[in-house]
Length: 213
Image (cartoon, rainbow, N blue to C red):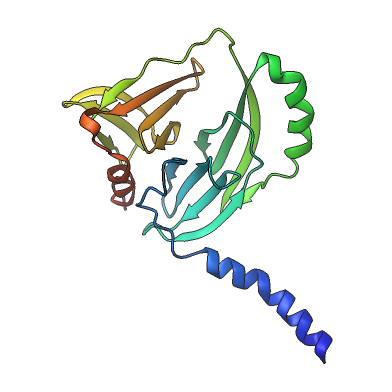
């Protein structure tokens, strides 16, 4: 009898932890200075990749269109990780590394690509790596003061005094507490966009994502 109760508890525990971890997300609030996010807005849900320097490994989170957390999976951390594509319900996660780190990285990558999650919701997750040009210097910081997300195309535009500064698919922008960084998959470069007049547009960005629905 006692063994049956213990077995029932173990069967119920994963469900309980899942329920505790979902529902209350604070999607539209920045969690702190040690966090950054990439977001893609689907037809029926929102995918957010959450990175942190404070609380361990990055996660891919799936929210409903009201910003309620439905599911999350954890990815093995490595410097340079980012979402570089979202197409046909496939999330492309890419480790960007330097040529000098390749010999050390490859055995690690082969080992961990089978450990990393392959699905979340209806999305498949793929992993690859890119070798960053050692002579490719990231771009200088540019100021912005507002943003716009096109509901139909999922393109995000950054502006300064109503002048267009940048326009790319929204998932290529990585939002931090002090800046928004754009990864260009063609030039393999990162451009940081800081907030003019100390204006923080991060939470405005989160609200604009939810306003797409």
